[in-house]
Image (cartoon, rainbow, N blue to C red; front, side, top):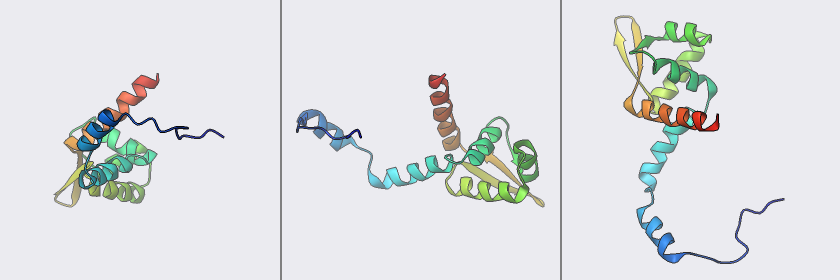
Length: 118
């Protein structure tokens, strides 16, 4: 079994101290991690990717595009909205969804990772 620890203490103190001073603060890391976690589900990633290709869609359109039941899509949209990946607005009896700028940035990072893997 591989051990992921160093066998000896070899701390590069200047580099480590500089990185420690500049590290992402916990109060910023937590919501960013939650946003990234929202795309960790294949259905949510599919929904967000579909929304990123248009201006906005209602739940029934998203369900049809993603080939998932509306109640499941609504559940996932709620999680994406809570994480700040999508935003919603009411239009009469319909609720319209669109990807936020933060969601677009996160999707771009995921897509870049896919492209690098090819």
